[in-house]
Structure formats: C-alpha cells, structure tokens
Image (cartoon, rainbow, N blue to C red; front, side, top):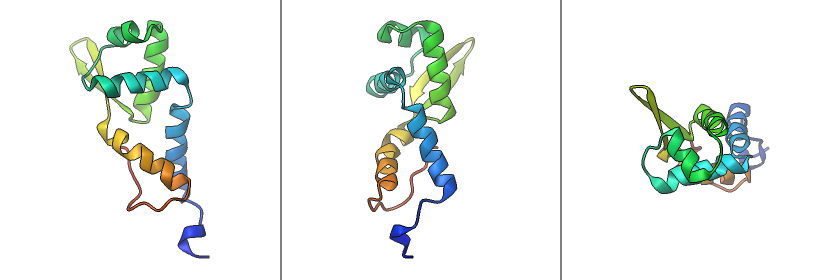
Amino acid sequence: MNGDSDPLPRAEAEEYASWFKALADATRIQIVSLLARRRAPMTVGEVVAASGVGQSTVSHHLKILAEVRFVLVERQGTASLYRINEACVRCFPTAADVVMGKPVPAAPTCE
C-alpha cells in the first residue's frame, strides 16, 4: 500500500478523536468561540455572564476543554483565568483535513 491509503497511526487518531469529542457539545463550542473571540483570559464568572449557562455547567465544560488543551488555565491567587490555546486554534482545521485525507505539510499538535 502507498502512504496515502494507509490509515492514520492509532495515537494520532486517538488525539484527534479526543479533540472532536471535546467539541461535540454546543455549549463547549460556544465557550471556545467566546474565548477565541475575546482573546483575553476570562474567569468562570465572566464566561457564565457572557454565555448564560450556569456556573457548575461552565466549570464542567472548561475542565473538559482544558483536558484536551483547547483552553489553558492560569491560576491567580484563588481565581482561575481561562484563555484559548492559540496553538489549537491554528492546528484544528489541519486536524480535520488530516482525518479527511487531504494532504497537509505536517501533522498538527495541540500544545
């Protein structure tokens, strides 16, 4: 078989699956969009106020987004500030292309 018809390596497929799974919720997509457009760290309270979703729900979704590193967390005293991971914003469209078999220069990583 040639390289173009080989399946993705398992580890790469699992990483992409975790990204797609994390984005398989409308509230999480809204939070990612909010943080990406705001381009500044936000507290849970600010995300709650902007999204209209309850605090425990927002915290739950931010935890999931942080696990796949779409969102980065900075601790400031007792507060946690959440910001979009710019590396993921840049590489996510490439991940979709890789999964769909489109040629890309290099496999993306969300660091």
